[in-house]
Image (cartoon, rainbow, N blue to C red; front, top):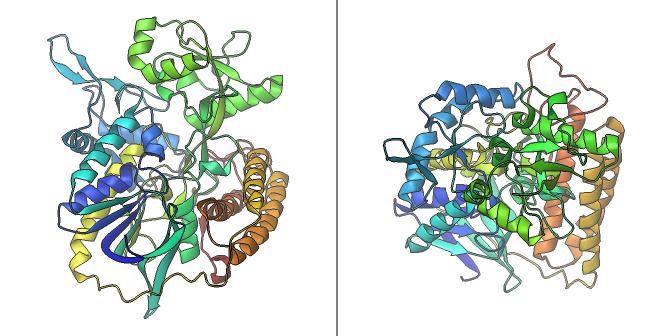
Amino acid sequence: MPNSQNYDVLIIGSGGAGLTLALKLAEHSMRIAVLSKFALTAGSTYYAQGGISAVFGADDSIESHIEDTLDAGAGLCDLDIVRLTVTHGKSSIDWLREQGVVFTEEQTTSGESKLHLNREGGHSHRRIVHTADATGKAVSLSLIERAREHANIELFEQHNVVELITRTQEAEKRILGAYVLDSTKQQVRTIAARVVVLATGGASKAYLYSTNPQSATGDGIALAWRAGCRISNMEFMQFHPTCLYHPQAHSFLISEAVRGEGGKLILPDGSPFMQDFDPREELAPRDIVARAIDHEMKKRGIDCVYLDISHKSEAFIREHFPTIYQQCLEFNIDISKQPIPVVPAAHYTCGGVLTDSYARTDIVNLYAIGEVACTGLHGANRMASNSLLECLVFAERASEDILQKFPGILPIPEIPDWDESKVGDSDEEVVVSHNWDELRRFMWDYVGIVRTDKRLRRAMNRVELLKKEIAEYYSNFRVTSDLLELRNLVIVAELIIRCAQQRKESRGLHYTLDYPETDNSKSAQNTVLTPCPTERH
């Protein structure tokens, strides 16, 4: 790729949302660039275990799926967005099957095959379409294969966006493209595009413990904030209740489906405890289960709790959870005979870049889809397996809007190249790694599952100091991928803290000891932050 290049559409992110949009637009002869910060399979989609929620069961209904989603969202879901998303569930699954995704099936009593449906926390019915316990991998590999085959799609690995390029004309801010670091050559390139789409995933790496891959550093949220977009509901960071607890196991998730198939959460002495927190026990929404585990760990001074599925047969476990079974065996844990040590870990960013029902942001021709966006679907807590569904539905919605207005989008004017004439190579890379570690640790300690005003103030004080250090470093040295991630992550941390400080109640994923009750005296409100010009750099 030359130092400067033009495309019709630039998609930043190669997960389920970004590749779905690329494939839908490529059929209309658009030139599309898809950027991946690392390998194409490095994003969260590839690692998603559970599945995709959609109504297929004869005893299920769209209304039931809507009701469950609203209940999990604790009063902050947008009903119109929920209905829009849920009603596209079956068509989204059908489209994936057309792309070559093979989902797990079962035989009916009449000998016919049908989709096997799991049940997960918050769902009143079995409605989780899956590929064993590696659904995201199946989706990711199929979409990558289809994208590689398409002449109109160019895929770029090891490309990290430095900054979005915008221009204001007649009081209207418009996207022009992005400055992009090619990490293989350590060179910043200019990519111009008539449309830019953020599909960069979430920000769980703001925390010390996370189920997500290293790529989840909130890049799209920070890029959009610096460009002038509103950000919403960042206080609602979902902590998955069950991440494998083992010194050699980094970020390995134990799927919600294990509890859906009868797995019990137990204390070290073998006694269950979820009955003390919610009548749904293990099938309660994730925020309730995560807080229950956190409570028991702190109360008893234990390092973890356990998830026990060993009452099921080994054949059942190996059929339904082959990936989890094999991964645990590598750590000498036979889940067919012994319980799995688990702890909560940061998992999903329910807030993000504020968008409308067509994935449009505050900047003309800039879209956001997938976990980077705040659409109104999840409210104060995402229900299990609604995330991949959201990726598919809003990729479709964005494609409809882009195709409808694309003929009228003006050509891209000339954009100046990236200027690094006044910076040099760093001789202090240790600063980046130390700041990264400090950030993730104080976010875990002070802005985690349970918060207080005092903890939030402590965290904000540290964020302000880190911002100054990182800004000085960024001004003096050539950019690296690690520096770009750190620069973005400190912004995301600040946005999480600011949103948390504004919410004077406990709701969904935001729980504070200073305001432990939900404020039902007035209608629930989203937390919306609007950047000032001085905050964008």
